[in-house]
Image 1 (cartoon, rainbow, N blue to C red):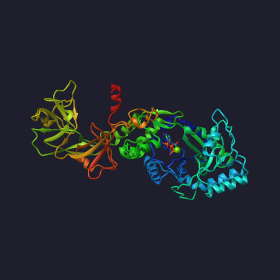
Image 2: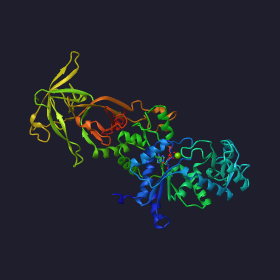
Image 3: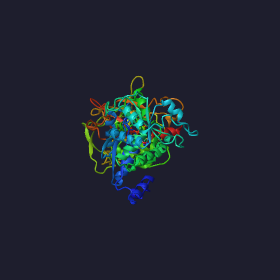
Length: 554
Ligand code: ATP
Ligand code: MG
């Protein structure tokens, strides 16, 4: 199938670069800043950079863009590694922009010597004021024409720690009247007396993104440096540095970032949700982080399929989270083990069943021909869902009602004979009879029923907790609403059912298995809270209940 697909614009560029002999090996990189956990947006960038290198027989580096000492932490480095691995990609080299600090410093010296960089003493405010605006040219700094010797001496003194934060900066000497504001003598280095997670206190000057990024690409001989559209105006500067330094000609290409509705995706906002305890943690199953999605039960296969389906675009758009959920459902339908769990029980006594408990067979997954079967105990007392029974049913209610018949999945047809109530008139149990010849798989009863219910046998049922998740936000694009995005949090995004009744096969539930609780949705064990009791997270509903609600205008 993939052969029939059209090439995306980056594939076209790569194929022409390979054909012309411009590059022999395709080298890409994924360059996260370790200042937060990866989210579903990053998976788009990961699938693209790793996927292209894989497709064309090249390789990908994982490079931590750790040039800002203040916001970066080792915890984030670990989580990023884990998430990329979980998605199913292997990097060739694990690298850190901070490994290049010495080399970058050397590049800066080179530019100073060539007359392309200078030390400026203006304050941040003055630099901003001198910069002009898109419609108004900037002004030269009074320090712009320092001699090479003076610049070298001052830059060395900056490195040696002789100045306080903000006292001096190193700037590229390009053109203060340039139409592209990014080329109006951009900053290359700033002074920051701060501890760095890897280099410790070795440095008190740190390179700016624009100076570090392209040069790191070049050092690693990255051929196609893929980033999101907001970097388009930076490309000219990216090329300028490479040209003036006469280093490996990496090239930058931009694609549209992935935006999803009903969530937020900037790390700063996600951090706010965690810090202010709107969610439990970065890996809260409602978060759009990869760790949250993993804990919720999303599969890497589904996420990769999703990234593939949305393709590579050159224009920003908002993707419907329904598409991601569709991909998750599609994969889970193929792999999930079918199990029966009753959330809100109504007891049934089968009055004509006087055998001991018998063990019935249930196939694990009808979509998977090779799948096993498990044993399901059936007996005189069972639970069904309360809302699968109605005393006075409307037309087309195909579940159980007085005098009505249903099939119990994997078991028998039963008939409701009597409704038992307490003194207050509440239904306490139902008395039913079963049809012995109607056993699933060997049914000779000739009776046709419309409804099939899930159920569990009372005495063999095990208890568990389930957590039902809904969208974290009530509006499609919370980041673009007026006011604080947190005002749009969905107050009902988590519903916990502390005791549900599950068939005993779930006693052996495993962390890496996926389950379809019949008629209830897809579930997986919670990786954090399953110790003495079983806790299941609902990954996704069976059908899109939300779209139906929206259609109804609720
Ligand atoms: P944030 O704005 O959330 O902090 P970022 O872009 O600063 O994200 P980085 O760690 O710098 O995060 O991102 C690493 C790579 O992932 C970059 O190449 C970036 O372009 C890409 N990326 C980040 N967010 C998205 C997204 N929503 N869609 C596609 N690619 C993304
Ligand atoms: Mg960034």
